Length: 68
Image 1 (cartoon, rainbow, N blue to C red):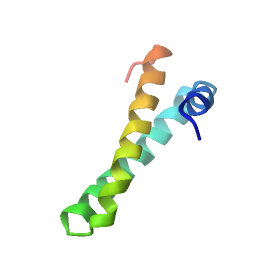
Image 2 (cartoon, helix red, strand yellow):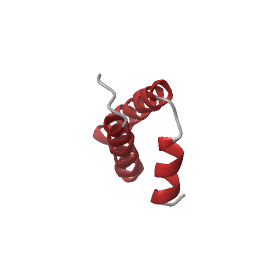
Image 3 (spheres, rainbow, N blue to C red):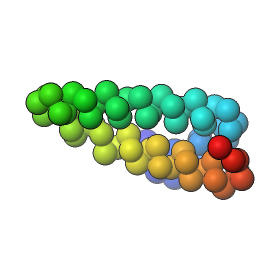
Image 4 (cartoon, rainbow, N blue to C red):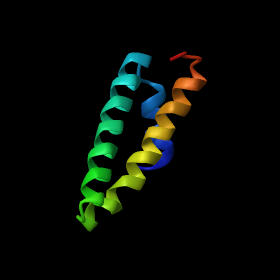
């Protein structure tokens, strides 16, 4: 999925949906970082795209003026 399409989809979601997706991504990043620290090298390649999507979600939340 291209970035522009992803942003369009994210902007169409409600703040509650965005927060839930953000929590899920944070949990996935945590698990992958844990796996990476335990020596599973393939987990490291998956962290970066998840962190970028998490940043995009946080940006959309800020655009909508949602406070934490």
